Image (cartoon, rainbow, N blue to C red; front, side):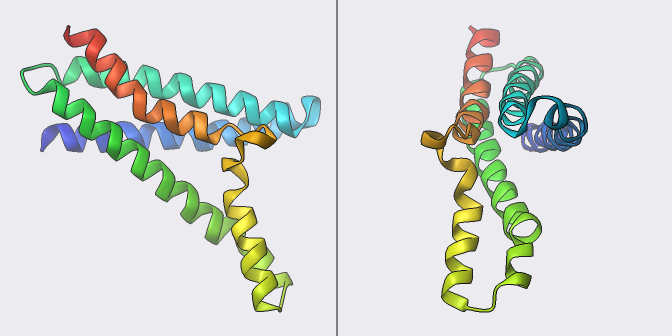
Length: 147
């Protein structure tokens, strides 16, 4: 139970850092280098954050049950990250579309495209890579610390 609480705390720290990183990128990187460079910067920073937090978490959860702990943490972080992303996109970012369109079919299509835009790796969006690292980082760091 303590490990679950600790995993949630570390995930909340990662999200707080991601939100702060978003504002920093929006203020300093987008005006100078553009939207895509900002996206890449934010993705790389968040990947590094997940690996650092995973390493700290793995050091805190040593013991005979470390394998199941880090596996559970991987699934937890992945699930929470996807839920957080989709909820924020639906009600904050894509919500503005809802106010400007009256046709329900067009509205649903636009909201779906908006919500899924960061998952389009073929368009250079890197959220899938960030989510993969959120899943893999606890496993790798747990194995590294506990072998």
